[in-house]
Image (cartoon, rainbow, N blue to C red; front, side, top):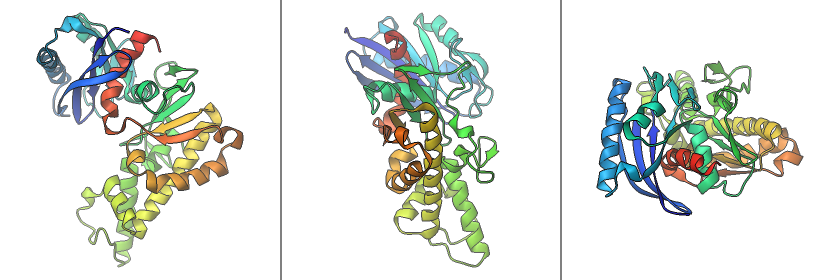
Length: 328
C-alpha cells in the first residue's frame, strides 16, 4: 500500500484537536494541534480555527493540502453521518444543522467524512487496537457518559439514523443515579459524572449523620470530587469510595450482560475510566456477567481495556477517513 496522509478532527465540548497521520500498512501520528472549543464561542469561530490550524499543521509538515487524501471528523452526536451534518450535541451549544463535511470539502477540495465519537473509537480499536482481527466487537466509551460503537460482521453498524449503540439510555434499575435523562440508567451508574455524583451523595449522607469521611471532611466544595479522586480514595481503602466503585462494577457487569446476550460479540473494548480503574472494576463486573449473561455467549466474549489508551481520540478521528478509503 502506498503512503497516504490523513487529517483527523476530534471535536469535543471542551477541546478540539487536529491530527496529521501517515497511513500505509499502519498509522503513524506525525503532528497534533489542540485548542479549546469553548462553549461561549460560535460554531463559526471553531470552524475558522479548524481551517487556519489545518493549513498550519499541513504547512509545518512540509506538505500541501493536495497531499491529504481525506479528513475524518469525530464528534459527539446526534449527527447525520450520511449527510455530514452535526445536529446539536448537548456538549456543543449552537451546533445545530452544521453541514461540516460540505463546509470543509468546499474549503480544501478533499473528501471529508463525519462519524460520532463512539463509532469512531470502535473503528480505531478495530483497525489498530485491541479489536484487530475480530468480526464482532463492541466499543464502549466510559467517560463523561457511556455509549457503544458496534462492529458487526466486520463492519461498522450505525443503525437507521446513526443512533445504534446508545447503551447509556438502557435502564438497569427502577431507581438510581441519573444519566442520559433517566434514573437508574446504564450511564447513570457507569460514567464519570455518575461515579462523582454517587460519591457526593454518599459523602453528604455520612456528614449529615456526623460520621467522618476520610477523603472529604466537609460538606462544602464537593466540586473537586470526580471519578479519579474516588478511585484514588478506593485504592487507599476508603469504604465510601470502595462502595461507589463496587456499585459501578455491579452495574457495568449487568449492562455488559445485556449487550452480550443481544449482540453475541467476541470482544468488548472499554475506554477511559475502565482503562484507568480496571483494578477496581473488572473482577466484580465479571461476577455479575457470570450471573446474568448466557454462559454460551459470555464464555466466547473477552472484555478488555482500550489498547490505544489516552490517544484513542486522535486515532478515532483518523480512522473515520481511513475506514472510508478502505471500505471497512
